[in-house]
Amino acid sequence: MATKLERRQKIRFGIRKKVIGTSQKPRLSVFRSNSDIYAQLIDDSEGKTLAAASSRDKDIAAQKLPKVEKSKLVGQAIARKASELGLKDVTFDRGGNLYHGRVKAVAEGAREGGLVF
Image 1 (spheres, rainbow, N blue to C red):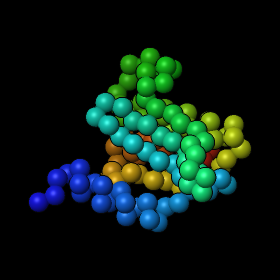
Image 2: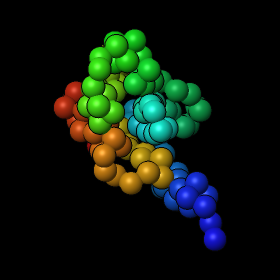
Image 3: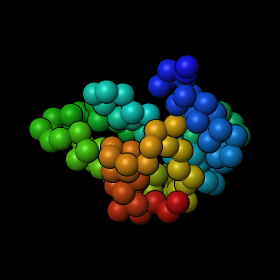
């Protein structure tokens, strides 16, 4: 019997086979821990992180909000950083997590910030 983590890893690897980020259309990767959420824009062709945002950033961590609300702020922060780099299109990588709750909030925040995926 596979553990929850092993099952998520298998799903994650399946997603990563299909979702590839380039310098024009980077991969928006979301990592969710129990307490925080992290988002990165990754160029897989060069193996570089172009921008990153998390719920541990000073301006987001200072706000006393529920985790879902903070996740939305993380999405808006990563969209702001992407626009500074001149990026508009991204591919979304949910990292093996279900598309609901905090992961969905990051996606909605990024879309509100102007990212297209």
